[in-house]
Image (cartoon, rainbow over all chains, first blue to last red; front, side, top):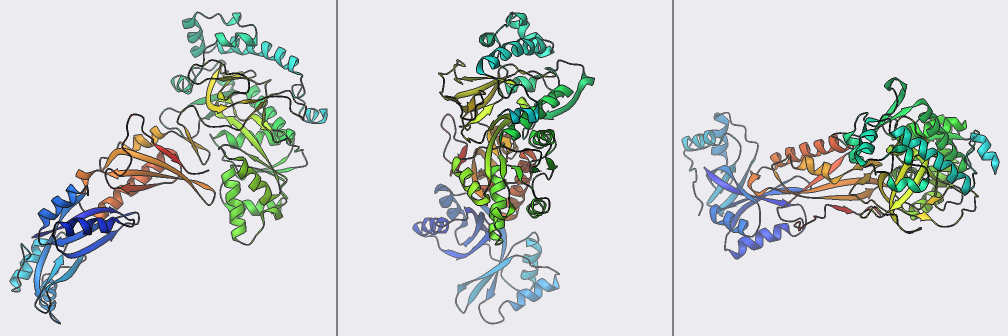
Length: 138
Length: 435
């Protein structure tokens, strides 16, 4: 199990810069970022190797944050690299509704980040298929 | 000039100042004696050691107690009633407020008098029985609809009780029935005009002659604009449910101040803090005493509306003095789409929601000439669970509760904690950007 950071933001110019600037100054690398938009406001979902420190820093800068549990499965970064995981999820009858991927090392390693309420089942299915479920990211 | 008085059959229309004051003395004595028959005023007079029969002239008004909206709430539903319940033929309650509303009960004579006062307003504008009148005001507990309706019928106009909304139908009715006069809020009149223009139509092609505009404050510039767009003459109307509703004060064709029917209402302008009368012509809070109401007379009712009496005589010849356009409120009541809203009503709903903090700001704007209310709230840091769906549902729930509270759609903006100005002492809760 891993966690992404969720940051509440009003939907107006400058809000993303503030997050980028705060994390940049602290030397925190954003591995992946997603925006869930609700018109007047939204929630930024940030994947980083240092979620605890990132959350503390963002909160110190006055932002409103929370953690969200995710399953992070390492997959090879090449064409078809997602297939083994996709097959494993299919076999377990899991319907993925919210997920994204990101590259850790170009041509070598990538991760598939899955959300929802079946995280443990997903992790078990991935492990049984011989894939690494990550508890931390480097 | 007396033609108009004859139209309505009112002996009050063209009274001289002396005749009016002499009538007021007599009517005030009667009103106070009548009020003393109610549980509320009987107790009040007793408590003050006031003998109602000691009130002999208009000058004695200073010895009478003020009546406030809170008094009306406390005496709800019929603590101020002076007649048998079976002789009451109508009740109206105040618009927009929740919790305990305020109620005004009317006898047959009261409804009759109200219709007369209203008919005199319409006749004063130049309307006659030959006119066709479309009433775009809400009927029901709101006094704007039935008030104008009865007045227009008394004058003998053909009335279309269209009610508010359904703009396409309003336009069709005006054309099909050759409507010459309308009653609407200024913002709705503007909305209809803008809608017509956007569809390539011309509001002046409707052939309207007069518009009676009221129920919400608006500027002289907006009146001018409406008159230009429609080619009608727009008359300002003032009223409040506690004083029956519309028909309290109305403009004559001079369009310079609203004549208060002083045969029916005794007018005082007081300093809202000291409650002492202001100098003539100075702005203060309008205080009114009913002079011709039977079922539920009100003594020195504090309207909370700020205005002044315009000095000098009106060229129209009427001696009923004129009120200036309302200049604001001595309390924090807002008038949005003709509905009375207190910030405390919004606050009450906000305080039920733990996911937002206690700080909030009400923003009033106009979109397509209609009042819009936006309530800005701050997300409570500790309640954020990272889910946008949770926030979406909470916001929808809050909007629903606000709509139920005030009776129109309110949009909610969720801000980051600490983004609203921190309240130091008396918080600024309202930003009005409608002008």
